[in-house]
Image 1 (cartoon, rainbow, N blue to C red):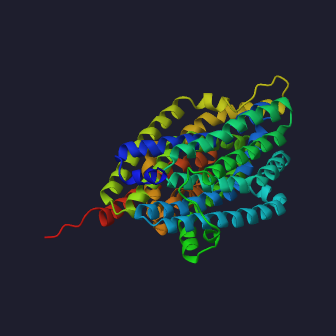
Image 2 (cartoon, one colour):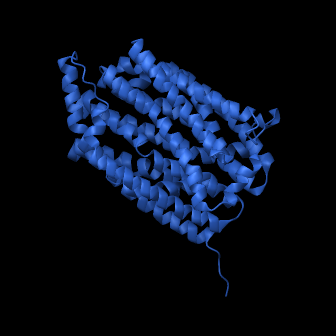
Image 3 (cartoon, rainbow, N blue to C red):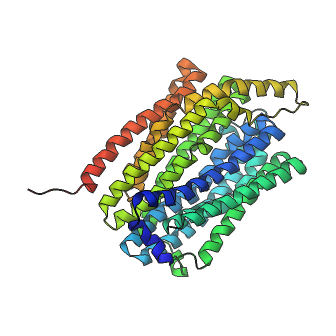
Length: 463
């Protein structure tokens, strides 16, 4: 039965298959984003906006290390999907075993480095002034759980590569429910402050890992590895690194963007503007979850059919994924344009006992966040093409174009723009950098995707 599930990727109608894969993936991404969103809302209401800014400082550091697991997972899952499509199960097993070994070695090493250099890393990411102590508490505790999160994220992508999107979704729902309950207990009932928020997040990672582990130890998975599969194979490691490097590079650029943004905004508006960006950053992760879900659902479909040389289905999957992602992106855009003030107010507490400084900080955030959010999300309807286009090259194992297109938005366009425009337009220049980068990266991706489709997926006619 398990084998038939992966074979469905090459048989079922693309539209139905994409919904089947994308809906669970979207829900999984939604609940993963809720982990961060719940922390932010609870922390903002029960601790204060400086605490939200502190979490914003820590996120790029912990996310980068956790992204190692996702990078290794996506890189290996591309091999697994194509191998299953080609009927080569041994290569799929070797890939999975190598993914486990790589995740262990990489995450443990980087966590040790992260702990050793904690006092120098936090200020570099904007953890200055009143933010530092809050950020350090959260940073240390969350970092303990990052290897567990790395294994959970790696395993989750492999579950999807097997075609088990529903279980992958369930594995992401469990930690969110746990995080919600533990946040309430640790922060509100036990008054543990930032310690409580950090421990709730870390323990929620653990529940996700245990769920994924059970899947692979049970009869649900068709990937039953042996000790020999854990031994690193140069060819497999190279391909995992090349393809996974796309995801890791993307997260590295995200982390660099946070570093630059936090420092620029601190210079422009101290803790208050970082708090504004923290709210916008949560929405960048949370509001776009259905678009990312379509992208994740698209990956195994494209990879499997490409491996099976069913190029007509690959073309159909590209077109369908872009249409679905564009539709949900437009709906997200409409909601954000209409309700930005209501969204921002969710993150701000109304404790009557707050100090004058805290009250002024809250009022500043509420005044600046809505229009800033509108500007950042201005080009949201067109991002589907950029995301699906970059994901396509990753799915079929072409690491170089996948890397360049993935990095185009933030690496080639956004970072230079946020370094240049604020010098002329101040805070406005920061927020306008986002839609300009979206537009330029979408145009670039559209050009290369169209070129690739014409070259590789359209049958050549002979006279």
